[in-house]
Length: 458
Ligand SMILES: NC(=O)c1ccc[n+]([C@@H]2O[C@H](COP(=O)([O-])OP(=O)(O)OC[C@H]3O[C@@H](n4cnc5c(N)ncnc54)[C@H](O)[C@@H]3O)[C@@H](O)[C@H]2O)c1
Picture 1: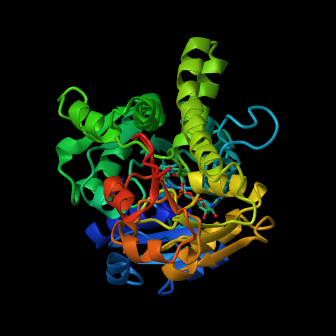
Picture 2: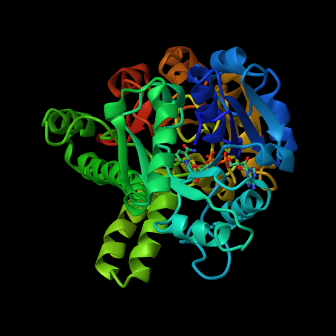
Picture 3: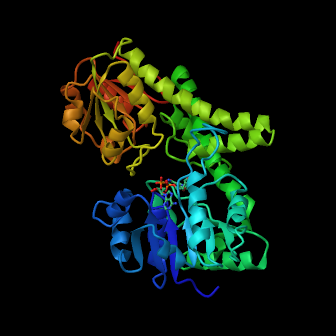
């Protein structure tokens, strides 16, 4: 193919938006159209209040928007003109029928691909960026290349490895870019076209060309490995709480081992986010489908350990409140599934808050960026919930502070001040290990922090 002139991205979410923004900033001679059928989302991308919060995103959007990057609701003419289409639609866990609760729901992928087949010219390169089950590209090829309209498409796999909260940093300087392609001459050339988009700013040595199936499966396995580290250290945090070992000291000692490395060894209330659980469930489902039951059980245990950790945490809150939180004010500090994002999908905060609401607690939920999503997550069950961006309103008169998101703001709070205005005995439940437990204990708090023995004044 000649150099591409127009690129369309289907899906203006947490992946499609930031990925195309960064790619457009490094490829100023190509026009990028980030599209979605969700009109409100596109309007938000075209406003000053972007629908995705990521450090550094606003500044790059301002540089490229309406220059060589355009946010548009999807329409056929955009696809007709596209040389390359990136498919960045959601692939959530299926909520119905065969594979319910486990398999990836590919309905959005299929609809997107049918639009591509219908409107795109022959030769348009289709790039699967969504996380999909291994061999999805084959299914896509079957849809696009069997319609007997004389059109031919290459389908490449180019999974995205960005992490929310550090998306811009990850996109500017990725550990690697993976491009999976078929062994045909045409597909190899298409892979080179996609590679050139990336080498506009990334060292070519970081771009790995693989077969399509390895590329698709690598993404699922990468998420499974990362989540497995979190579950492994979380399992040890429970043991630390019983034995007076400290999980952070263990993480430090393990992380110094070059074979293990320091990252993803932070114990917490549990991992969340739209990807880890869904992708592992999908991996488990695929393994089961292939009759690999031991493999499936192994990866299932990573999710089971995560669920156990979150359940264990909320049980501790309730037990420590003399087995009743009914009518008590509890300050929830953080609802996003991690810091520096407004995303709350699969956040442990959802489960923790639902359990505390069931137990009739009065929740005051504070978050730096995610309150709008929190409201959606708890809608219909939040009669006893107050959402606030005011720390004093959240904490005044509270029986307990429950820290669920590692926002930097929570590390810097004046905990002595807060203590003076709380109901007594006052408790801190630190699900993210961000406070100095000994210091807060010294102020008079009873402190339950993941991974150390409780510090109680009674
Ligand atoms: N969020 C992450 O951190 C992350 C990281 C890596 C990979 N992924 C993967 O990337 C994919 C997208 O994730 P996301 O977090 O951006 O999802 P998202 O839900 O934020 O965005 C998906 C968007 O696609 C739109 N859409 C659906 N069908 C469409 C169509 N036919 N045409 C145009 N738009 C359409 C939806 O309206 C939605 O706005 C998923 O497969 C996910 O697993 C996500």
